[in-house]
Amino acid sequence: MLAHVAFWDYRIVTLLDQWGPQGDGPEPTYAEAAVDWINDANKPIFLAIPPRVAVGIALDAAEAADRAVAGMSDDLLARTEQAGLIINPFRAEHRREHVDELERVLRPA
Image (cartoon, rainbow, N blue to C red):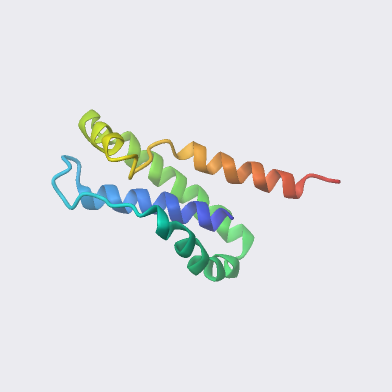
């Protein structure tokens, strides 16, 4: 689960890097229909990562994504919002969803 969140955070970093600070690079795209197969294809890889390593990767990815999003200009934020949040700057929402899930699983019965 943590590697999954890291993947999606690093996706944001990569897309923003390619788009560029002025938004003059290739505009990011997003296909809702692809999300499930992307997650399914990555799952065996994510499960092979030791949990403690996944924690480190998730923290590094979160920091990188937060820095990348914080560097977005108001213009880029508006453009991504107009395009349906192809780059979702609200990373905490996705993280919280999975942290809540993790807490439920780890909570003593």
